[in-house]
Amino acid sequence: MSLDTEQEIRFCTTSDGVRIAYARTGTGPPLVKAANWLSHLEFDWRSPVWRHWLRELSRDHTLIRYDERGCGLSDWSVQEFSLEAWVRDLEAVVDALELEQFSLLGISQGGPIGIAYAVRHPARVTRLILYGTYSRGRSHRNLTEREREERELMLRMIQVGWGKDHPAFRQVFTSLFIPGATREQTEWFNELQRISATPENAARMGATFDGLDVRELASRIQVPTLVLHATGELRVPFEEGRVLASLIPGARFVPLESRNHILLESEPAWGRFLQEVRDFLGVLREPTSPPGAATVRLAGAGAEVATRPPPLAPGAVVANYEVVEQVGRGGMGVVYKALDRRLERFVALKFLADDLYTRPELGQRFMQEAKTIASLDHPNLCTILEIEEAAGGEIFIVMPFYEGETLKQKLARGALDPAEALDYGVQIADGLAHAHAAGVVHRDVKPANLMVTPGGRVKVLDFGIAKLASTGMTRTGAVLGTLSYMSPEQAGGQPVDHRADLWALGAVLYEMLTGQPPFTAESPEALVAAILWRDPAPLAALRPGLPDALGTVIHRLLEKEPDSRYSDAGAVKSAIEALRPHAH
Image (cartoon, rainbow, N blue to C red; front, top):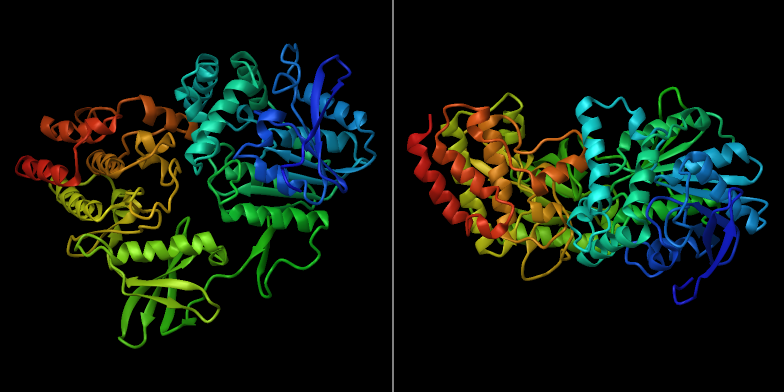
């Protein structure tokens, strides 16, 4: 189905008199999508965030979706927001279309609505698909006092900033929903928030969603159910998806490797999502798991975890390398310690995660990583020995295996001696200066990516998301990295340059000296807000006796505006070196 085909929008009325807008596209068995927060039938239709969802879900089915009360093209002036009211919205749409049986899809807040409907109308729902959703709202997750305060802060932000022309407040939510978005997708999602609901309705809906609890209903579901959840998403914790799957009798649970609440077309998780959903709905008949893949079930639940290719076992031989053990795993790759049998030395082998090498765009990015590392020759940067191909066609990078421990491991024992911290800071700045001069922005400088050898040499690792300025491979506006060490512009989905690395270096220095990152929070939403708008606590408040000049350098690195930071890593190195005689 092409989106050149016009959708058909109609209206129906609920039992309590609310007018609901619904749309129908595609042909085939009906697939009804329960409404979730933030939708607008017309605005979503050609959006860069939702159009691949609408295109693919309408390919083999008649896709039916609607705007819930208070949202999009449905009535905005409504009295009641509740689970009961939202189920009435769904009932009105199904009854208007005279659907006898259909598959039901619940995304995010649409999950509890779909669960309640499936329990109430088990004869109508033939298959239930739940993605990125939960059985218990945040109010039922044993929140600490601080987490409750953060929840109230986010609701106040909606009330204050939702309807403003300036997107600063809405950007916080966009960064949580789709941290991997391009600039176009970011701008579109910011605008969706503004036009889809009033600030008052958005806040009321958000508060009501937080109070939902369908745990008891989930245990009563009688229809085949597929639960999918992104492992690293920031909006609904992965644990909530696991809990939900464990409550539903016989549910199959599929973890998807993504940080996005709404899966983007360019990421591997989207292809995996489509494959799993189509298999579940009977569109694809062939088996999707390779021979020998393992299946895991959640203890005491009967909820099945989707299969995946097994990792390389110790003793496996790849090209001329014998695998010793898996030593790391990131968003782009899996790293093994291996023995080079020709030269009798230990090396590190980095493969694309699982079978992602079959995605051409990821293979291209992986090769870019190899070229990026190969172009850098500096004692504080990781090097590359060669690029090899396994028997199955997988391309992998061979790098030196560095003995020692990561800075993250060192910091697990507490803050460092100031002289040691400054020595590491000089080395990191020196390595970054070399990378920046070559046009490379790392964009994920953090303690886990900084290896300290037994001799005290710091190695900056993992340029898996580095941007080689001359290639433009990573799209403008993409949010890649680790939240606690993201600069404000990176957390906000804005374009970044080498000064984002300087901000991250400031965050690492801060943590080395105080034992904690400059910004901490008990929810991703609050952490993004802190990075964007709050100032870190003064170093002297956390570790009395540190020189004031040291705090001045670090706080300059942590300035919100890139122009207020140091101009380059070389200037940072000089500033830190000037402080070393005064460190105690």
